[in-house]
Length: 244
Image (tube, rainbow, N blue to C red; front, side):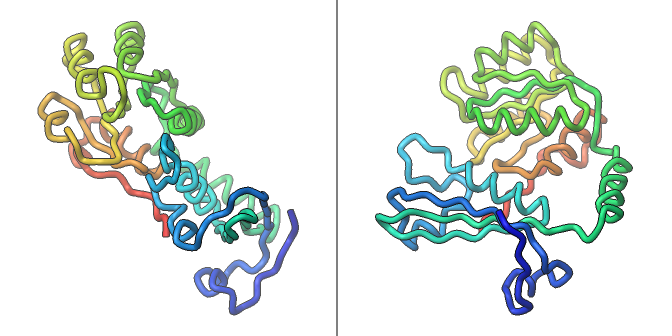
């Protein structure tokens, strides 16, 4: 790690001229490396070179860094390894930091104290979503597949369910049907990286749809709109991560 001051002609400075001083975190390896063609796509949601990869890891990293006002650079040589350089803006003073903290505390409109069940087979997505919702006051229950989701819903009767559609086993649509059989008033927000089965889920009673990968703010807004009974957010596609 090191403190750096960007030149005025740096591309990031041109995009955000109010910041020049950054903390740079550099991570390097001596692995297989990547071609330029692959490197150009590594932040795209769902792009992966692994047989069982999800392609969400680096897109989530990109989003987290951007949400903190930073940016990321990367380069790679085939057969030599890859280097990532992550830049976080340095705040001017403790006073500026305190103002940002107070501003975040003042915005309570997206917080809540309801219980939410998250059903998703992707461990990373499940963990991040759980942490974000807990930070905003929600009581979170998690399930790694549809079968476990049905059991936990029947046991806890949470206020809202975040349900992934593309899961192994009985899948999201069957899970939704089972939950509806248990409680016809269940509030379900379905999530998917694709548009399959969306219309079917809507007809079955799902309240909203979020396109994966989604921004945490869009997730919180959708949750509140469904819990508060607003219809304007129903079936609104979530805000995808910018990955280019």
